[in-house]
Image 1 (cartoon, one colour):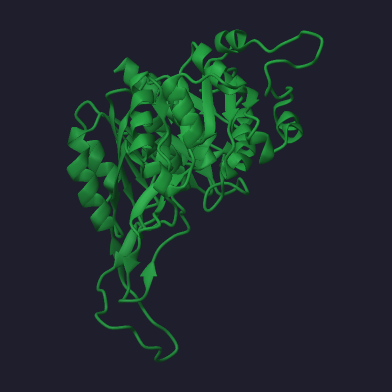
Image 2 (cartoon, rainbow, N blue to C red; image 1 turned 120 degrees about the vertical axis):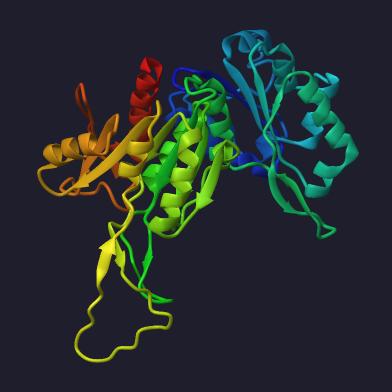
Length: 401
C-alpha cells in the first residue's frame, strides 16, 4: 500500500527520464507523496517545471537553493522518506552509488537514506551487460538495495539481453508490493477466470463475452498480498502484470471439460478457490469433424449440460474456503442465495447485468458479497479495487477458519 507513503524519486541523465512523469503519476494516484531529486544531467532530458507540476513540490537538484546561504539537507530527506526510487538510473550513477562518489545531490541523498532504496537501471544493452555494470549492481544488492530488473531487448550482437528501463506501472507495482501487508503469505489460492469455448465444428464455438479482467485482477491481488496463485484461465487476450507473474501459475484451457479437469486436480492442495470464470452451461452433443456448410434454412444443434465445477468442488471441499460468482439478470439476491447454499460455497459475489457499464468487457464492476451471515453491498469501482474488496473478505474468513 502506497497511500500516505513518502517517496524520494531520483532521476538521472537518461533518455528514459521522460518516463519519470508516468512514475510520478502512478505514485500520486496511489496516494503517495513524491519529492524529486534530479541530477544536472537529468535536467537536460526533462524540465524541473514539469516534474514540480506533477508532484506539487519544488524539484531538488543542487545543494544550495539560493545565494543567501539556504541549502537542501540530504540528511533530512533520508529521514523523511519511506522509500527512495532511482528511475531511471544510468550506468554512471550506478557506479557512483556502488563506490560512494558523492558529487551531486542525488548521490548524497542516497548515502543518507534510512529507508529502502529501489533502483531501476536504464542504459544501452551492451553497457548493461558489461562486467563493470554487473559488478556494481551486485555490490548494490549486497548493500540491501532492491534492483528492479530492466526490460528485455536485443544487443547489438543480435543476442537477447536487458537494458531498457522497466515500464513505470511495473516499477510502481514493485514498491506497492513491498509495502503491501502480506496477510495471505503462505496461502495457496486457485482462481478460475475468463470464458470457456465449446466447439461446434473446427471453426465455430459456443462462448460468452467474459474478458477475464475480474479473475486476473483477483489473481494479482492475491499474489500482491503474498499468496501463491494457480490461475486457470479460459481463452482471454489479457496478460498478467510482470510484477506479480512469478507468484502466479497460469493454466490455459479452452473448454469447460478442460477447466473442470484442471480445477478438480488443483483444488485438494489449495487453501481457497475463487470461481470467477464464466463457464458455459451447455455444449454441443456432437462436434462436427469438418466445417458445417450453409445448407437449408435452419440448423439444429442439440446441447447437453457441461460439468458443474462449483458443485463438484463443493462436494470435494475439506476445509478449503470456496468462493463463487453469480451473474444475474433478475431476482439477483434470491438466485445468488440459492446458489450459495446449493453449491456449498462460503460466500458468493453477486453482480447484475442491469448495472450498465459493469460486468462483461468493462473495467468496472459493482458487487454484493453474500455469505451465511449477511450481505455487504459495494458501489461501482474499477475491477482492481473490487478485487481488493473480495480478497479482504477472503482474508477475513481464512483467519476465522
